[in-house]
Amino acid sequence: MSHTLNEILTQPQAWREAVTQTLDGPGEWVAPLRQAEEVVFTGCGSTYHLSVAAAALFRQVAGVAARAVPGGELALNPDLYLPRGRATLVAVSRSGATDETLEAVARFREHHPRGFVLAITTQGEQPLSQRSDAAIVLPAAREVSVVQTRSFAAMYVAAVGVAVRVADRTDLAATLHALSDVGPNLIERAQHQVPRWKAVTARGPVFFLGSGFYFGLAAELSLKMKEMSLTFSEAYPFLEFRHGPMSLVEPGTVVVGLVSRSHARHQRAVLEEMAALGAHIVTVEPAPGRGMRFALPGGLPDEVRGVLYLPPLQLLAYHRAVAKGLNPDRPRHLNAVVHLNLNPGMAGEV
Image (cartoon, one colour):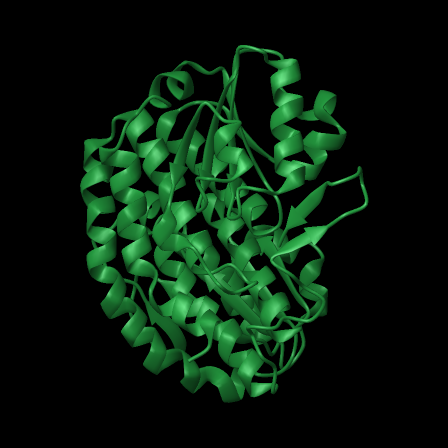
């Protein structure tokens, strides 16, 4: 079994660790996040997409202003992105050694000498944890693969747990604890269901659509499709897709919808419009149905359900790569850490 496939299939244990660390572990980061006038989430590549999803969810759940900024942008243009008021930085990095993210932490320290930095990572012994005021470390999420799957999912669950604990939402905490219990069955169903779509989804460009805090997840899944299968793929908010990008839809195009319970009517209307233009429609949503629809377990609120969208669509990218004769463990041109010639030693994480 490839490392990538194994890491997709073994996520629930890492989810459990993320929930335990954030909801039951030391909470020295809770007060600084509650007291912040704005929380900035930062990362590079996959962890930037995670930051986009986490910032939107944090604002929704905790009621604190939040934004996501790529680590490289904070490093190069801190004056454009860092708030002037009381701020906290949440820095996310699988490796804990991403130089752009470390540089972003340094720029944050310069602008906010009394500001608080929380790290979310899988590697506690690396510089990011050491340069932060607190760290949520997830060793069960560590990966061999270049492409992030299990690590992304676990660090995202940790970001959800952070928001839930800061908001003191005991109702959401209870459902978070249930995630790892539903995960194995969900992944087993996805293993049987997703490969059946291969004949229909193995060709043509792929567009991922998501709304609200699911948009960051759609962007991450689009990146997985690019990295693993060398497919032209983009992500858009559902309604935004109708304002220009839909001109690219033609017979054979694949449109993937991360359908939420709260906005399902509007989202399905967009998908139906794309189907009428000849697109193949794939959905992951909290409702059963026909066609290429993967049904999520019921009873979970949208704020908690997000991680469940990841395994089926990570598998979609994996099986497309295999169908094209590619090795997902060896994505073209990529390494776990990408060195960029911005400043000596600066690097970015895929």
